Amino acid sequence: MNLSICAIGRLKAGPERQLAERYLGRAGELASRLGFSGPRVVEIVESRARDEATRKREEAAGLAGRSEGAVRIALDERGETLNSKEFAKFLEKHRASGAKSLAFLIGGADGLAPDVLKTAHQTISFGAMTLPHQLARIVLLEQIYRALTIRSGHPYHRA
Image 1: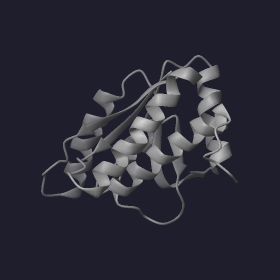
Image 2: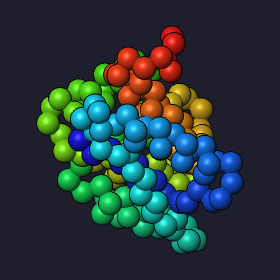
Image 3: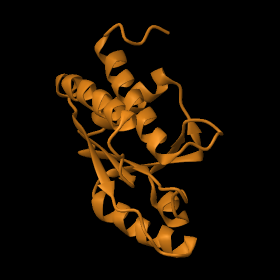
Image 4: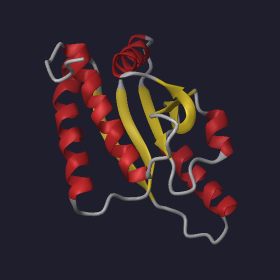
């Protein structure tokens, strides 16, 4: 099953990008052994429109085009919270179901458009706090890596 992260905006060069790339590389090394490919990150250009509604609409179109055919998982503070072991089971459940692709959707500074949230197959949250989209991407990459280590019996997850 292909894992992808469709994210509004770019991570600029610097410590955030380095950390994201570290988890991306680690996850990629484990993924193929467990029946996954990726994860890959798809960066979608942030809208420059003046009003929020137009920005969200333009960004929603970009997310829809890059996640077509995948099981779409929206990241939003109002979603279901999962602990790390539950997230590992969540990934495995989708892989075992025969899903070809799983796309995690991360909004920009304005969040995700209501239509994106409505059409997502599921919405998950990293907690009630609002995170900057760059940090949400890093947390998601770390949790994907952690989930893969849980599934493989690797000692990274010690809880």
